[in-house]
Amino acid sequence: MVLVGAAILHPIFAGAQTTFAPPVIDRIRTSQVPTPQTVTPTSHFGHQIGQGDVEVFYLIFDQPDYCQSPPKAATSTDIVGIELDEDGVAVRRIVYDCLTTSSLSYTPTVPGLKTLTIVAIRRNGSRDTSVGVSVSMFGVALLTALEQNTTTPFLPFTSRIFLEADAL
Image 1: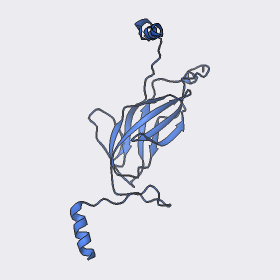
Image 2: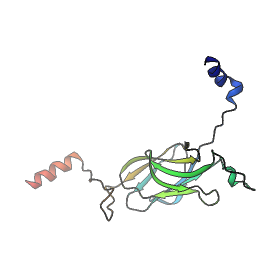
Image 3: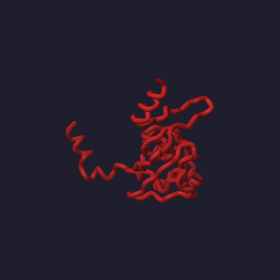
Image 4: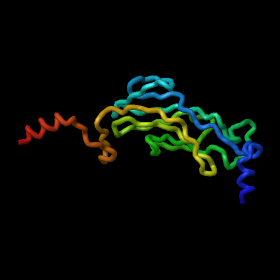
């Protein structure tokens, strides 16, 4: 048992393990700027809820074998889906198409600082996640037809005092 563990940790066998490049968020388009803005380590993004979608542009460096020309046979590590997550929760998911997909968009509904990530889903179920990008969502709520995904407007403490005083 010990010998098996030692063999796996040995540098000669470590090279046999395959690592994949995670997706990279390249640009983001929000309500603040109509054109996509490049993501850098010092980027700050903001979005006004109710003023359109947030669109996240991504790059995939680990192309599946079936994307190459001529296509090769499918493998268990091929990317089959791409997911956009907000704070670790999927908000949009698509079947990966190596020729046409390079962005995902969604309509934010809850204000606050959100971390957006792109997740590459492989045929074997493994997931590779990009580094997160923070976006400040401004606003109080987005009312939908069925009143789902709404939030209670936040009022500062002093505003609540005046509202309650007026109610008396």
